Amino acid sequence: MRFLMLNWRDPRNPKSGGAERVTEAYWAALRKRGHEVFWYANGFPGCIPEETINGIHIVRGGRSGKSVVEAIRWYRRQPSFDLVVDQHHGIPWFAPWWARTNCVAYLHEVLGPIWDAFYGWPMSTLGRTQERGMHWLYRNIPFWVGSESTQSALHRRGVRNVTVIHYGIDQQPLEELEPKPLEQPLRLIAVSRLAPNKRIDHAIRATKALVQRGIDTRLTVVGGGDMESSLKNLTSELGLADRIEFAGLLSEKDKDDRLRRSHLLVHTSLREGWGLNVLEANAVGTPAVVYPVEGLVDATLRDKTGLVTRDETPESVADSVQELLKTPAKYAQFRIAARDRTREFHWSRILPPACDWLEHQASRRRPMTIPLIARK
Image (tube, rainbow, N blue to C red; front, side, top):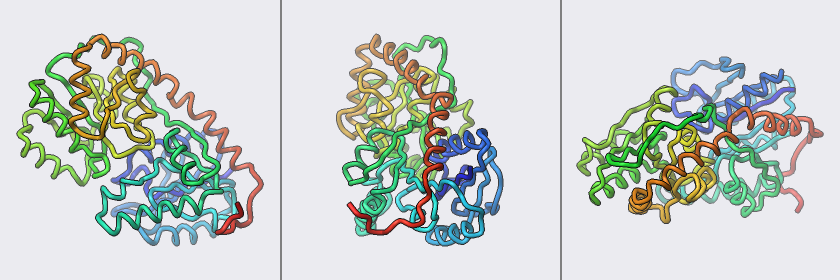
């Protein structure tokens, strides 16, 4: 079979993140089953038009605003595909109306408030409105999502057919957890692209709140992005330069080592498709403290594998961590439960049923066209 992924970014894009990592895993698994797999993405400065990564044929064309037109031109020159996956990141590719084959919409999260993080009014309002309109337009297209939270959000918007396939991780969970008493200095870590929607400034302010309460706290920030300079400035303004380390982009091995040595992962994003780094931290015996938002409440089970804060505020992070410090036995239980739960999310368990589902979608009777206004 022939499969095509449409995604604004590919694994080599400087702004690629968790969405691209999991997409690559699914497509590489299909390739290992003998299928032909293609990935069409936006171009970026210094990129090459085509290359093969992990058995996936990557094609790049156009930039924002032009890539859909370029994709259609490229697509019409290709042999027919059995399945086209239209991956939404705010704006879709409209593939069901031009691909003339089986199509699935792949969504990591309903952006909602993320529009406000990147744009001021009126662009943020326009973004929210068009996103809701796109979900209505796609309501009769099968959707593929990574969490039950995203599934529920789409159902509330009228999308009828939503399949959940959880994200997977490469790490094998540690067989034996090394001793790591929850004691001071408290070692926190945030692993994220440094973008507005990730709210790393909240992790920094939570560190400040803990220090002000007399708790000796250190924070390591792993990742890079456009906000690095402003976050470093905030760190200096709060007098935390000796307590916060910006480690930058790390290799997977070094990242896992930092996660293993930390007491808690702090995840304060506006929302996530799942929160992949929560599972990565859990696999090495590090629980997470997360905000009560879509995706993160799926990755962390409240008071079982970690902490879900009451509110989306740095003070609420500090409250949760301070309370946990009073019950070190509970922390030890979190470490074991979090580690054990990651076994069900290893790629060896996720990929076989995911590929089965994608093959089933590809084998459906091909539609010739889909009306813009579908019947109820």
